[in-house]
Amino acid sequence: MTMFPWTVLARAAPARHEVNRRQSKKAFQQLWVAGTIGVFFTSLARNLPVHLGQMTAAYDAKHTLDLLVRYAYLIWLLGYFFMSALRNDRPDAPRTWRDMVFDVLESLFSLTAAYFLGFIIPVKDYGGAAYAAANGAVLFICLASLLLFYSRGNNRLRAFGAIISLIGLACSIWCTLTTLLLYGFALEAVLLFWLLAFYIRIGVDE
Image (cartoon, rainbow, N blue to C red; front, side, top):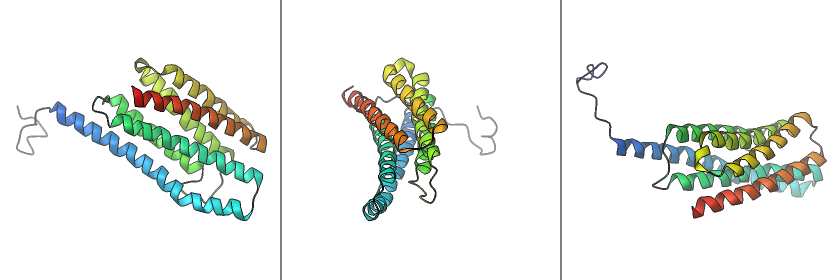
């Protein structure tokens, strides 16, 4: 049966092709996640030589620690999205609307974090707001995946990540960005990398 607006095109609507729809969703997920990874790689390649030169020319303990922690957050996001891309590439990877919406939103939050961390447009130092954005991105990833994909397991891993990033977010909002706080963020990054290692191990072997 031909219905509007297909009547304007003088043809009937095509029948639903589930295989093609699934392949289209897979291609969208792969392209979106791969684009996010590309931004992170470009940010590393463009900023790392500049920052290495700055640390060598005029060493400052707080500034160096600040840069190292910012890079730790960026590399964490890069590692997380690399694992996401690997899982999306599998033939049995889920292709629901929840997966697609989650991929889009986590990318937007993570790119916002990379911007505030000073890697996309390195023209302004946002101070504590940079760490608020980074922790906010990690918190969103953990909470959203916990709520949307509770039935898929790994819930304790997500809960631990949410708790750690929530503490980091609270500290970045209400505390002054001192050297001591930067050491706290460094410790948080170590814990997040520890959780990421478990996530990668589970993703590779399951």
